[in-house]
Image (cartoon, rainbow, N blue to C red; front, side, top):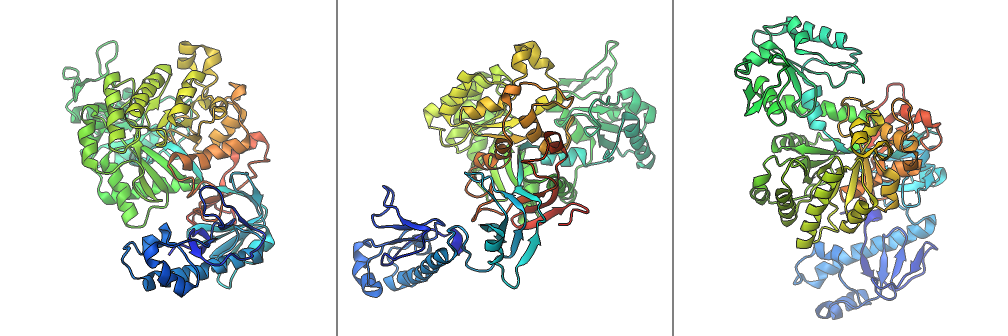
Length: 632
């Protein structure tokens, strides 16, 4: 049974006096005479029950009543005898009366709990990010959910003998942070596999680590690593650098997420690639001006296929261990929910195995890659489920990274949109400029004409630039925007040459998007990738200050408030995944995903936003990370 505080039902009771937090509200969707409590725990009504049960049930209760959805769920068969139904009604009646009494006793409609909470947190600054952006001193958790929010006295009064009491010592608490566009699985298999580059400060440092690994490699065993974590501005290695280490041991260095890699001579030989036979999977291998192989991999997807061919396949256990490590890294950064996009079924199975074992502590919404756009309808027909399928831990999100609007023929992309809509999927295509945005919107509009998508929250990823006219089209379609902060790196070159400096500085046009009443959420694109500070507070800092990594202010008219920045990092993400009633804010009945912060994000000087970190991260009321020396 669901807990009393989140239960909503109608039972037959005489209209009664209650505390001041209850009121009559005979609106068009309610039965006249309904008494409603703020906590939505008891809607008490004197109404007519269906005819064939009315007489007997009136005799038992002494007043008419009607069945509502929650009770029908318990007794779905209309032929169930009234005694069984009324037995259930009497239990619910008792809970309703108890709830109303508790409301009157506390004088605070949302704070009642049927039993003592498991934990209370007090003496803090609780930034709820609810509709009114209210701030409180304390809150209570029972099981996986928040059950009360309020003053220290009110929350401490709820504690029982077994309730854990945590003194927040004045620290700020916010809802769990989210990443609307991460690649957790890819980071696990690319950045956490092989030679560790954690803490590598320079290219010579990275090469020294590779050299050490080569000396320990078994004959024929490839040495694999990634240089994506090298500090920004550091040059990557060349094939010559790798050949100086060894021309006998295959060395593979990942330089990008989607197969962008560098191979030494031994690795090229292992793949059967030579100067004369310089192709792989039908794609040409890059050469220099002298016709020599540079060691760079071919374009995606051939580049990723090449890496997979050279490396031994991971066991399920190895894959799960790396994925758990990537998840723990995100908890340390304050993340509690992510959209992991561009997943193939094999990657989804890795998440599924963790979910089956109860080991998944990060809430993941999975995006499906469809590399073969020509077969999209056949593929989706076989799936049998679509976007939104799953639970609070693991769910299907959208058709994501493949196909790209501009890489795919416009006619074919419309067919993808139509097929996705037909089989219950939404799209979340990657948008890099005006042309790709127009192509995506045209496909969305075609799908909408076939069957409305306005309530399906189709997503546009990145959207670095958008005109007011394009934003109007997005509003009409009910589209949500998944924004990232690539402009923080200060690399506006490509956009500047295409649209001019003034417009390039607008990216992403966060203020304009919000002013158009579009729901926008924030993310990294690839946490831990090149140029990343591995800190989800980076987008908050950038959206508030519009300062790049180099200290330059770009597009100052696109600044948003700290409150809005928190919304796009929490509750707006929850809306994107259809979970705004389940998580994203600190409110009774919602999942207890929250952070205890090192600094108050609403008052700390702007430049210190970048240094804010999580002292403790909780998911579903369970602590999944605590900072060393943080005291929690």
